[in-house]
Image (cartoon, rainbow over all chains, first blue to last red; front, side):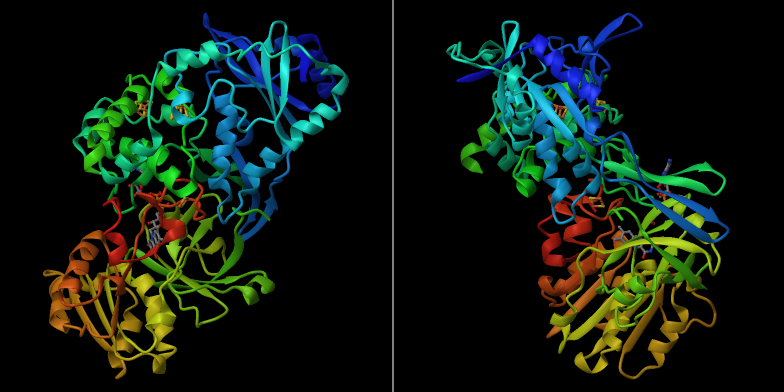
Length: 352
Length: 276
Ligand SMILES: Cc1cc2nc3c(=O)[nH]c(=O)nc-3n(C[C@H](O)[C@H](O)[C@H](O)COP(=O)(O)OP(=O)(O)OC[C@H]3O[C@@H](n4cnc5c(N)ncnc54)[C@H](O)[C@@H]3O)c2cc1C
Ligand code: SF4
Ligand code: SF4
Ligand code: FES
């Protein structure tokens, strides 16, 4: 038996939650200077939700990892300082229409936020957020989720997955949080004995598979053995180190910690998104820089995602969302780069 | 109180080491935290000036000296310059201790050779006092220290004290051109002084800290002299922000310097890519 939810009932569900004071975040259409795009944003009204649009330009990570987060406030009078704690519990948020690649990223980044030290801010937001993902009904030439073990119908990181079926959705409940959401909306999600009409998104999956095929284990092995390789110099030549790729990446989680004054004798310490591609990231006070040139910095980006994170946390730090490819002004193409590394790994195969 | 919130510390004393380096003696404002605070030689902390930000220093005092911590810092940027403008009685923030530590217990009953260049003496000084405060538990202790010039030597009063003690050998040098007319130490670079001091490798541990050039020349030299790579210890100082293995800034290959380090052996460094 499958549970179905009509778009009308989905809208009613959203209205209920908005009425109860829950923040609802969903893909909405935007038009800026004639350019149309979709982005995740808070909605006031279910009609704003665009579940059939293109992939939101920025990832969902901003919901659990805001671009700037206050760690605490302080007041200072002469030499004396008073600290005002910042909350690490947050008000309820429901995300409707997360892309599976964005939902999966949350679960992947959980690992680094919870080894030894537990990041209260990250998990505070995670705790407060319920994620309803929607299976993808379209993709473009930059998508490659299938190459990193995900799919347009992946449930990772989601509490519910909605699978479009005509004017309704099939509801797949994934987690206890999802169970709770179903419990309060059971009458809206009647059981139906309509047999599964095959994989709704299999055509999309097919299309994504054609973009990149890769063997992550082999790639990881090759990367582990080839910190030095002429390839690094070659592929990084056109990168200008702006870091845009990291800011649009759902799995990039580097941050800076800074103090910001907010008046005489008071201010806040915040953490802000940072990126490993600009040279300043690792520059020492002495002028020494362990990552001397852009090839070293781009190598770090690839290594971190496909070698370091897998070896430390057992996960690939990439969901194949393709945003870094779409955003790059220099035309750096991670699909082409992975294909080239993959080919090297293939050729090295027996000699490793 | 969340992970990123520091404890408040008071500056009890400021010692001018050189024209650009100072040592701050700090104590926790909250008596309960002061009472419960403990750390191991080699660990570091995130020190902050409210309104300027945070930066990373080792704890330069010894864990055997309770009730305070010391940090020695060189003014190189935003926070360290703000730290220079502080006075005795002012408040700073401290998060820590973080990271791993030197294997003091394993070194007991053995010889220990300390080698440092410039401000690299700060983390080494912590281990020196740690071993001196437990002097009868170690065999020979040798300190080899060099700086660019006489005025760049840090902890001058302590160098004098160590020089006067009979239970520790002290060798000092300054770079050619850095000497003064009354300088009685050697005039050479640190690796040359190590060769001159020729510490015996048998039953010995080495602790080496300093600028990258001192590390890269001294570690192979010690191995050539017969020190086991597993017994040559140093620290890495990759730039850090969180100190907690989260912010992604400090890694050398698969290693997070803030959590897996900052203390590494020469043997471990050989398995890492040269990104430090
Ligand atoms: C484990 C560990 C232990 C350490 N122990 C010690 C110690 O005991 N003593 C010690 O003195 N140091 C120590 N350090 C080094 C110390 O952390 C740094 O010197 C300190 O963080 C510098 O902070 P800052 O804010 O003053 O410098 P920053 O302001 O961060 O600047 C550092 C340098 O970065 C460059 N820079 C930064 N921002 C910009 C910008 N916007 N534009 C252009 N250039 C820029 C500049 O070249 C500047 O000189 C240690 C480091 C580590 C990792
Ligand atoms: S890959 Fe592109 S987006 Fe990323 S830092 Fe280089 S130029 Fe910027
Ligand atoms: S590395 Fe690129 S494709 Fe992979 S998750 Fe990040 S932005 Fe998406
Ligand atoms: S300093 Fe943030 S991860 Fe090491």
